[in-house]
Length: 218
Image (cartoon, rainbow, N blue to C red):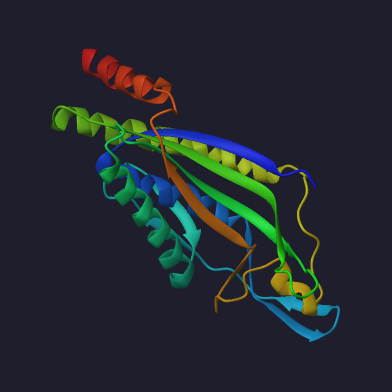
């Protein structure tokens, strides 16, 4: 199986890291989650509804839609919080990458553990910019909102393609495809990882600084 890989790049102010990552990760998971499966008998099931919720950002002019699941939100916020803390403590000019990997399990015979096979990975490269004053912060607030809007459209376009998805599992195999631990939603199995590095390049941050400079010049 070939694993699809998508890369997004964003440049944000330090206080915008949480909201930008939450907006992008939640957008992806919104399209990679289903309602809970309710099996009547093997091979026959119904799927519950998925509630949604609009979230207004505090430091970005942007509103995103997420699955209305407090459990899922807590899990995403925990991962994003750890990433932001690592970014802050890195001393590497605020560059890093957070990845959302979807996988399915392949059962192995005892005594071997199950094999986790990734089928889609989203990597978000992040660069934190330092701004000089409140005027620049206001411009950044607007520009980052515009960029996130473009990224969300890109995410939806990619996910709308007719490409590989794990087939709907039987009741005995549902845990090999979906995370069934949440009470109100059922995302595909996923994991979030991150790395902090100074080798991501500076093209995104340079673009953001140029946007701010050009706006100030108007």
